[in-house]
Image (cartoon, rainbow, N blue to C red; front, side):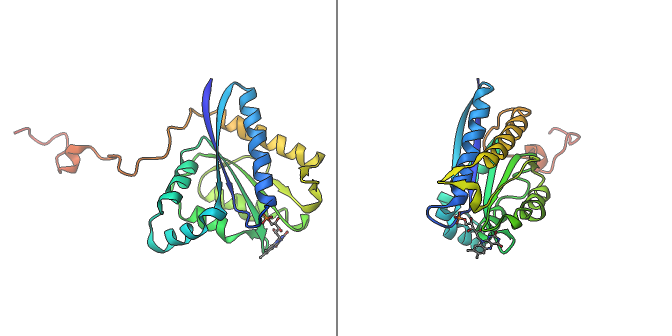
Length: 211
Ligand SMILES: Cc1cc2nc3c(=O)[nH]c(=O)nc-3n(C[C@H](O)[C@H](O)[C@H](O)COP(=O)(O)O)c2cc1C
């Protein structure tokens, strides 16, 4: 059995939040798919609403408060990421963008990502393709082909209807495929790790005479 960690980021602002509902359904489908393939799965849910003030503080000071640091580590140390935003003015909302703005450069390179969005109208479903997918492509994450948009008519009594359930299942399978292609994540990068040889730090390469 391989241990896998899937981070789930939801940028919904309402309570209850349809964005969080979609994120939870994507997370459950991904977990079930990975478990079916013999993995054990830990879900790390990051409801950005709880970190809104910390995200702004991080933008102003350059440093994440402790709670936000833990949320960032959950994302950057995961095997796969589910990222879901409400559509605001035909794009991701500001909180979603700001959270990914405060991540260390290159911290999502090569990371499998499933993107989702909710909106007031299905006419804006392509915001996933013209705004959210390009952002993760810029970050050099690996975004799965199926993105999942949920409009109000996709929910019936809070549960996903048949077509939405089908899209969720397909996207979850694609994310599981990408996660399984990779060795298990070793957690977030250590910001204090030595990346330079100690002798080089002293200004002495291999050819320096030993005295
Ligand atoms: C400021 C604002 C702008 C919005 N702009 C759009 C939009 O351009 N297109 C759209 O489909 N829905 C838009 N909506 C509706 C939200 O995307 C929709 O209600 C969403 O599902 C809310 O998610 P939540 O329940 O998780 O908060 C907007 C809502 C707000 C508050």
